[in-house]
Length: 567
Image (cartoon, rainbow, N blue to C red):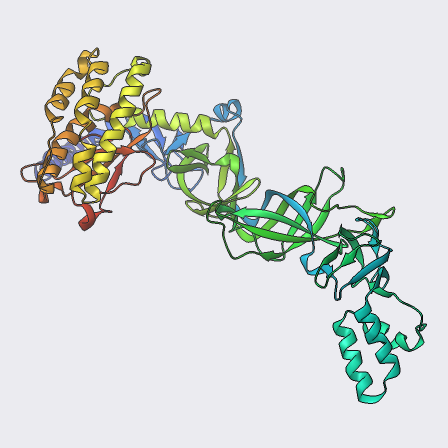
């Protein structure tokens, strides 16, 4: 009886299984899914694809459950080369080191050079107030140190002598009026007060130093007759000197009033003079595109002479410290053409490529405006090797679009380089004329196109793979004097299409001249029966301007980077 009941249960179970199989598409509920029968290759984090394991577990970065990757699946490796996973052994071999991006002051030392000059506010020229004869010189050579109020010379002047005698004889208001006249004749207040006690038989009057300083010009001798207004001495106060240097336009963001400047000169070896910027000339020199900056320096007496001499050559270092900005060391940033790139440590042995925008450049640090954030760990050593690995990853991960055969780098001879360079100049001039809506300039620029194109074809015809493109360029090189700028643009479009197809693949060749390829995405709106995208070449030094629309849409352009597929 027991065996019979057991048999009935087995039959019922089988019947139920057949029923469920019929109801759910013939798949047994107790059977494992077909995918489960495949072999698991490894387990991988979907959020951090470089985290892999041969056993189930969790991501060491985010804690997410690892996803099984079955045989025949690609997994999550399609990162396009922007994330480079490295093993611990690779990290050690490549000596990868990182530094934290952080906000800190940006310090820069701006080297400058200039001349040591005297303080113009303390520079005096002493001229004769009256006609007379110099009877005695106390300051009898230039370079002599003088003190304010001390006599420089004795002068005999009948005019001055008569005014002095009148002063001694007068009283009251007349005496005051005469005192005013004596001041006009060059006497100081102290000299005028002393006239009452001056001996009546004294024939000379003293010429006094107006300030303490150094006689830098001496233009009078004993016994010389001088006339009113004649230059006698020039005196400069060298206790404070000016260091004057030229600052150029690119220096101006760094230079501010009050900044410290360290100054050295070969005449005082081993010593540094420190001063502050006190004046920046607001007028730029049109020829040099520079302006003069003044630094004031103390110039003490040492063993009876000033340390800084007049009109010395000197060099300075402007010490600039900007408020806290996001910075990284210079060694972390790689400049790849127009892009600046860093690699950020993602943890777990992965390094992500990030394009950054650079601001100001300090001595050892760079200001970063965008692309990373404070706290990111940036690769400072080994980043070149990581970038090379990233390029390999991109080339293997994404099949390149088929491109026209290009000449090997070694095939670019000197003659070919010269022909390409001359040809690009012609093509650039034609594009520039059309972008300026200047038909006459285009006709003139296109005159040498026939000859330069012929030379280019002759130098490249040895490469059989280029023959179809050379033939297309040969047919498009014929220009004539156009009277309609629209027809000129149509001819230029045909020419540029052949040009870009031929030489765009050559711009990365060794020795090739620098040039850029630009694209307009609306050419079909002005030239009938052509693709929407039209390209042209320009010299690398000129910004892209649209030759197909000119002033109507001058900036409607896009730069085509090397390796992008041609239309």
